[in-house]
Image (cartoon, rainbow, N blue to C red; front, side):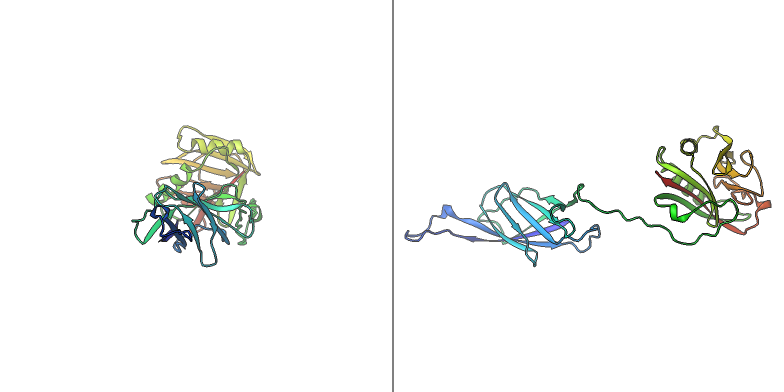
Length: 295
């Protein structure tokens, strides 16, 4: 939000050689002072030039180093302020823009007037996107195929589970919210596992099938080979699970191998890596993850 404080003083245009002045020739001189709301953190770029136009076709000015400018405008005329700013990177393409609501200045107006202009970023401004890559070293064991250097744009669910303790209602809600926000035809690869050991699948048809049917307790598949593992999807307890094993294994199984994600179950067999049930889990706790890389 930008605030334009308009301070004006009445002045009279006189013609030398005449006696007196015609009051009908009165005009108003506006001093427009630009004030930036320091509470706003929306800006990515830093504007270095600021332009104002009093429309329709009344006056134009560039703000000076004090963020102010002076223009002359007529009284009793509907007008509005158009604002644009420019950066040093692209001096010919405006970065932000906005227009005020119409206003009038009369000979009886108060000494000051504040106009608020809501600004937006120009959709044609060539903003460079910065991708953040997690450079943290990931220690992998056999069948771990995650390469952090290749993960550039992803959506992640992560939560910590404890051996012998059932998932909480809050954890189930968190996982369902993650699933509900996924959309088909968006992702090219999925990883499942824990923070130390994950496996992946790059079959987009399979990924879309899981996203579309995660709430469907009657939909299932098993033994779909992808990324060196056999993937399984189906119901287990109060919800569906997704898992990957080195051989074909059905859903809701207790195995000491593979990768299983089932936080919707209503008991302590929430899955994990190298042990999907309490009796064959070897770790006291695991931070399970599902990561989807966008196309």
